[in-house]
Length: 473
Image 1 (tube, rainbow, N blue to C red):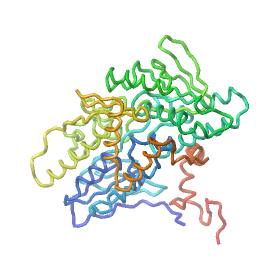
Image 2 (cartoon, one colour):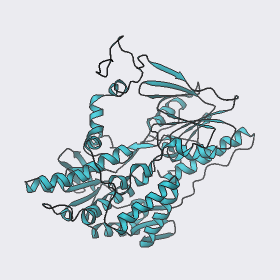
Image 3 (cartoon, rainbow, N blue to C red):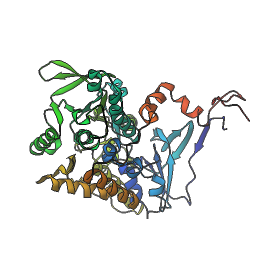
Image 4 (cartoon, helix red, strand yellow):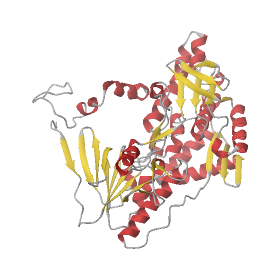
């Protein structure tokens, strides 16, 4: 077992080629790395996780349609044929713009990565608008861990309801509240309703899953506000038809284990008793954006995004490119296409700079439209002047999302699972464990030191002492 702290420099560059460091293995980071596949550079891609996450389909993992592997292929596997990329696992804890270094850490092992060009695509996390205590009782939808925890909570609620004797307790367990009427919230609420009304309706003996209550809350006055009033109204009507209660102008003021407190537009405060709460409202950029702002003097907005120049570089630092949800530019939406196009643009700028060519014109985002599913065979699609709803929009949603899933194997298994879920009544991913439901809270209570001590990671301990509690052989 390693018992001394480790601080390692990054692997030396080969042949003195320019070093490009990419922070983040999401859409922006991955597409930037792939764009540089033929460039004469050495790339280090630092990912907080070992996988590339197709975040728009997280809700299908949470509701048992897809497995996590189908939407989260290993980053190393995706880039295995690209020899100029080195994939590194770690959370970036510091960026030194003066020294041009990035510091990452994983399980107590710290590594410093020097760079000549830096692409920061660390994305965004869930925002509770200053009420971070809500996270304990209302998980967000930003990671595989979130989705698996929610899967356990959702399916587990029905299991506990089957055992409950008190009708009030049955009602609490079979009430599901989704906070946020944007695409994620709408899709999540719709799938929970379909899960209760179609998939589980004959699986229990004491309870009737079709009586489950699904509530979609938002402080805003509209559903899917970015889609426009017409599509938003159609989405709301469809949600009502499948049994989702849509409550708008409802601001969440408190969340606890047993329910959620709401303040309506008229000032009245009320409570919904619910065992399962899901937070799909608001995002906050990675803390790295604020770090970049402090070092460069660039402004940081309320969502934590750092202001960039029209070419996506940091003011005073043309070697630092910020893409995706971390950057503030022309009020661009926080969607995958912004990250994809930004990552490719940054990579092209780097290639042109190394070739001594003129830089590209300022970044222009090409809006390819917005989509959201509401229920089986029903979706809404906004393509600018062209707007669709119903089955046609749903088919368009299937094709587009299937196209962006990484890997042929994942595409094939995704189609098979969609056939099972949408044409039939089954859901092939209904396994839920206590580890999934309670693991996050348990790790938070144990603290960050626990991870290193239980994995044999680098640390400083008195000679001969084993923090794992195991006896030496």
